[in-house]
Amino acid sequence: MGIGIIIVATVIFLCILADKFSGKFGMPALLLFMFIGMLFGSDGILKIPFDDFKAAERICSFALLFIMFYGGFNTKWKLAKSVAVKSILLSTAGVAVTAGITAVLCHLFLHFSIAESFLVGAVLSSTDAASVFSILRKKKLNLKDGTASLLEIESGSNDPVSYMLTSIGIGLVGSGGSENVALQIFTQVVFGILVGVGFAFLVIWILTKTSVIAEGLDTIFMISAVLFCFGIADMLNGNVYLSVYLMGIIIGNSKIKNKNILVPFFDGITSLAQILLFFLLGLLAFPHKIPSVIVPSIAIVIFLTLIARPVAVFGILLPFRCSVRQCLLVSWAGLRGAASIVFAIMVVAGKADISYDLYHIVFLAALFSVAIQGTLLPFVAKKTGMVDESDDVRKTFNDYQEESAITMMRMYIPKGHNWENRKVKDVSMPTGSLALMIKRGEETMIPKGDTQILAGDNIILSVPAYEPSDNEDLEEIVIDKEHEWCNKPIEALELSDDELIAMIIRGEENLIPDGKTMIYEGDIVVTYR
Image (tube, rainbow, N blue to C red; front, side):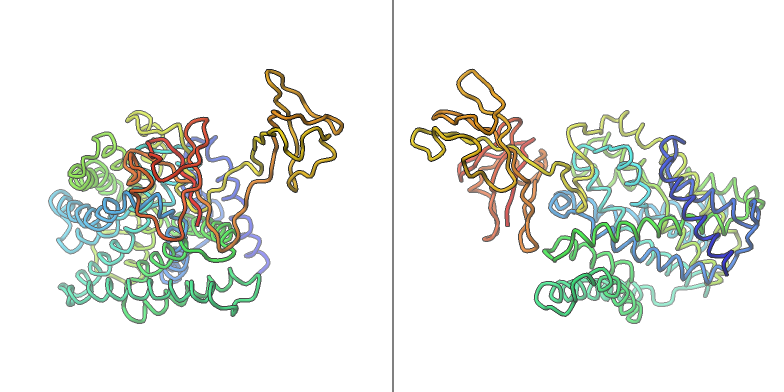
């Protein structure tokens, strides 16, 4: 028992080190997690025998559950809603097109049966948000034209569609035919949506309208809520991953107390889940089996990366007048990862009647995708001219916080002000503030306690940054050319009754707006609720 615990602790510590130094190695951390798993596996150094796909399926499903929930919870809807239609089309029709094209190519060139080809396309049809954004955030790469939010919504919401296709594929190869596919799709979508939305509003009501949850137990309550949502959706044959994702996105964009505690908590849980998933992928792999599947694996990766994914992306985005360079980047950013791993394990654990080694094919596909596409993603972003140096990619997430804890305020002293002709030490300044300098005509001075304040002085104060309370929301919105507020006066905006535009930051200028004030591209609009 003690040895086993030490091994688990060692694995986690090595993965943390891998994450820390992945940038120096020039490859994504998730790829290193897989290699660590291989080192511990049957063909590795420690030769730990592990091939229990049933146990792996339960562990991975549990891990993916929290990855999906946090993917929705951490999505900043105000920035993402402008690209929501494109993202949802990519995560639904795009996944279906990708799976279909991959299946056709597998049948034509690799001579898999139609059902088996469909299963390969289904398992590998979704993209992985964790892989993409671990790279973008580490490299601090924001993308133009709302592409970061586009990828965030798409990769966060396409796993449920891939899961549904995989479930259908397992039925096809298991029974040789369809088991009422239409009914299966209906129950997965309808019950998945109803359970996810219903639980989201129930959780919000409990957290905001009752005192049932004791102080400090918010994280435990949220874990139980996620598990309840997952369990009820599963009992009703709904799409469990769709349920927890919708639940996450609704709760994460609602006004609930202690969100500043929930965000870092689930960030840690999700990081551990990613470590677990990619480590298990390596642990379950048998390197001596890889040579037998390397040719079909490379062929499938080529089908996905160079044909199926680009066709789906260009076909969906070009009608929205998206640029070719944006389509190219979105196509390249379709990394395969955690969800494909779980779905492949699910197929093997279900003893599907297939004639090829699906698990090791998916292993190599994920390996090549993260290693090649992931490593080259920053390079492709720069070459396509899609890097936005003026903004921070972290602003597209709910866990973003400004680094500054103070702000500057200019206070003009007119004639007759009660500070006039008094010393700095004798006036009552706002709590926590400090007089940094006094501008007097052309002169700038650093004040001391006995410095006298005169009429016409401009006093520069440092004051603590305002921290909104639990029932308030103070937010900065960066206006790009596609934002619905761009080039409109404030009086023309459809604001809710409790929403106020408090300030507009335009370059070096801070504007206190009125109804006639225009909002332009590049403005930072500060809203208050």
